[in-house]
Length: 255
Ligand code: ADP
Ligand code: MG
Ligand code: MG
Image 1: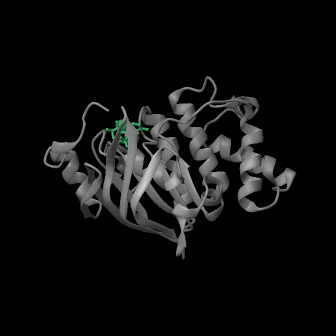
Image 2: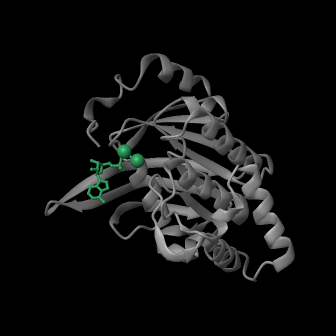
Image 3: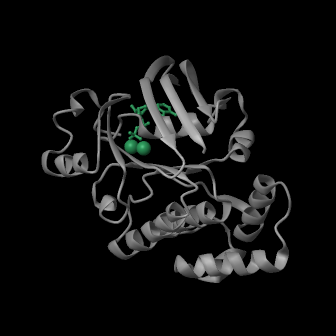
């Protein structure tokens, strides 16, 4: 069973000619089949955690360890991490002009599965998954994220999740900016993957509303670069009622 283990992770970023420590000792274990919600105020370092796990070059690991099934993730390049089974759905998906969705998905699936998916079953799989996500199949011929609305970008992230079937999926604010229908459609996609029992999910969110659709096994409160409290789904109810105020004193609420 796949396990992602994060131990005492410290991360800095260069900003305005200064080195700023953003992550200040994150400890977390995510096992295949489990869903963990990470909840915290803006600026607490949630996306920094997601990017650091994915291998974004802007973030410098200054301490701690990350392993996937005992393998050192921090030693791996970004593509090695993806092939090892890590997946990141970005908070702000980037546009890739000149690369069609169809080409992008097939190239990614080929890299991750180690062989090109059989064309006939692949086309069917993509089409059916797009239909379940209420994405018009004409999106396949468009450039990745170019001119997509916020909601369309998030559906495209979940389309990748469903097709690439990672061991550990990090979903960074996949719920942000979605209306209620899109939130339900995206959540159903996450739940389909989850129900396979083959993915560990790290659901990063600022709001509790997505947790009405995706029931977490564990909830962690993230504040000022660390997990400050962990519990079960009931912790989300507490946050819904009380907000982050009790935790958020040192977070930058402007970001
Ligand atoms: P969250 O996702 O919880 O809103 P972020 O991880 O985006 O928080 O940001 C945490 C802090 O780190 C903020 O103060 C933010 O300005 C800073 N930060 C994050 N990424 C960068 C970056 N690439 N360059 C400069 N500062 C950054
Ligand atoms: Mg933010
Ligand atoms: Mg963020």
